[in-house]
Length: 143
Ligand code: SF4
Image 1: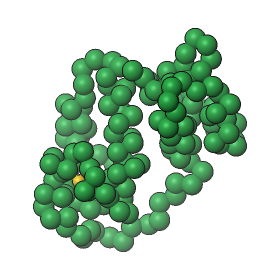
Image 2: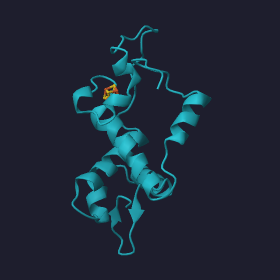
Image 3: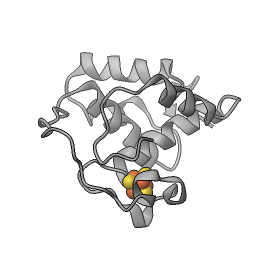
Image 4: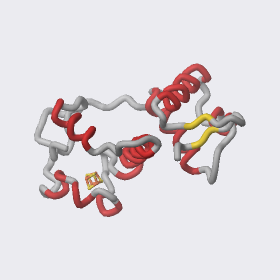
């Protein structure tokens, strides 16, 4: 939102307010919005090589509008992503995104070997409203 190539990892209060002002008012629309934003960051607007030509929010992107200015701050330290809950959550969401409908638990279990971490990530996705646990034991994206 600041138009920087590598903005700080934490948001300012103004940025949080702006993000909240863009949220849809009613669930499950808000949950779908959250999934969409996460997918945008994972698949299109990646830190190393954003695919701006394919970006659905290109017209509203300040960094792109400003001519994609190069990072002018201190050198960035390598980001640890492998093995994190965030990576686990992304793997679980990818299964649901790629499926044509609800998926059974075994389809989620195979993408992350650490059962404790996998269950924690799945519980968090459900608690955040990003995954719907169905009555028949399967899981689906909200909507
Ligand atoms: S145009 Fe889209 S992909 Fe490119 S930097 Fe902006 S938000 Fe990211």
